[in-house]
Image (cartoon, rainbow, N blue to C red):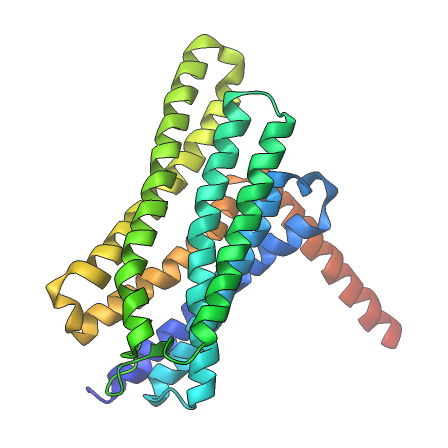
Length: 289
């Protein structure tokens, strides 16, 4: 039975990673293909999708490594470690950028200041990503899959530089996500005030309440991940690695899935896009006959 555990867990990792990768890819494709989504907010959302797909690609390969109980090759492990950790830090920075973007939109008119701030934060997020790509590619730094005995989770290896990053990483994550959550709380208070002052804004209020719920769920998942991953004494057990990896997978797909669920306009455009593709396939197959 124990020999079947890696197989079952690895398959679950792989299926979940591929499914959530597709959800992010669909959201990215829809936003890219429609002019109405060419705003600063949706530029941030596109970047979030890319950051999540980076991580999900590495997590999918990690599922294969779990099945085989090996990381296959040093260089493959090194490259995927760079991709997943830099992608994660990019995602964290972009989450804060999106929160600031929403706060600026709903607390005042769109001005040059709004555009400059959001563009600056978006650029800074990608600079953080680039810095980590370079740093993690250096000797002495790296993220590896497994600990050499079991293969269930991406984590910093035992090299000196990696251990320094391992000590800094949880505080970076918690600081960024706490700042994000505080901004959403401020926005929530503003929206409550807006709802009381104008019934005409009720539609806007409901939409932003859904977004607030997404932020709270995402933040809660992140807190569980950080506490178990960095501070809980039980984190040496293999089952905790599995829980952490599943939480990581969910975090990478949560934004895309919930965005697609709450945004009726996006769902309509996906349906139209799929119907067009099915019509093209039908026409091509008919012409061949």
